[in-house]
Length: 288
Image (tube, helix red, strand yellow):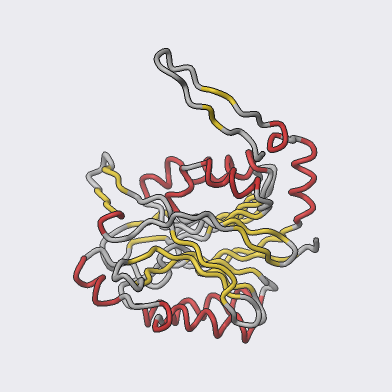
């Protein structure tokens, strides 16, 4: 298990996939020039479009998508693992997926993950979001090999569902991904603490590339892309909401060491919940 450099790219994606693909290429090249061999982009790298009709007109199938084509080409040219944190993809059934894609150094697609948890919330500042009205949720967690590490996938709102990360850690993931487009309000409240918590409770690195700033469609995202080590220490941060690249070393052996010192993955036990009435379900605390 060798040490390698990971990069998180912070973007401010607009409504044009073509312009966003140009920004993507510039930032990926910058990250590669800094020695990163695993590079992650934020949620909705391809475009952030709130208007339903405009969104429908902009997004296309995976084989025709300009961000997918750009990522495939860059991964092959630069010899890197390029992780598109997510982009909107038109599925064969006509529904949209909020889809993450990982391309290997030969340009081949190594993994695909569709965001499972939909951001359906009403915030106290008046913001209201119904992601499920536009996107079909995924149903499968994904873990894959990169650079001698095992990468677990998630997207943005998935961060608030620790069972997803625990399942991936139990499946061997020592590097967890959380590409995001966190709102400013929720980011200021919870971004740092949740990312550090997911790292600590799973003894894993966390790489979280973020959208940041005021976008063309009027939304405002928090930025503050982070890389966190298995002890919950922030080892790289874009401490603002501007486009940027952050880089840090990932040593899978450090995840193994953290899990040996605090073996909570191994020590978890099945248990029942007594809610005071009826038969309580049994919950699984560890793989069996």
